[in-house]
Length: 110
Image (tube, rainbow, N blue to C red; front, side):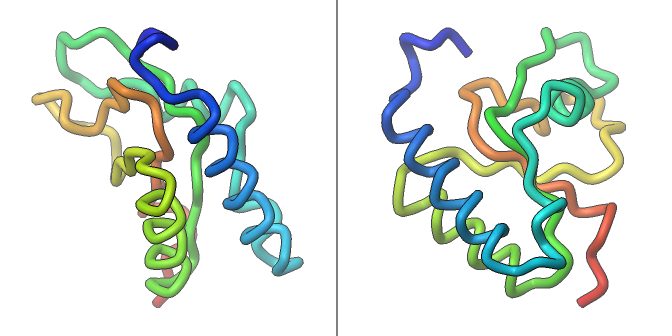
């Protein structure tokens, strides 16, 4: 999404809070990313829609981590996009307004 449609300060504060959340648990440190590679791999599906980069990608390992991530995003009014296999044909996994993508496939064990 164009930067003008976002609230950059809110997004930055949210990402900072999420990084703090994930960094507080040594085992979770590698499950939150703002790396371009991770963002690009969560920016498209099989639809005809234009890819859109999320601001960050979380790889939660439990329902508790999902809830905490969603709560932080809600507190900052930052969109959350659930991402499964990325095989959507409708474009509903595209982060058209940026936000945080939750990859529900990699680590979920609870």
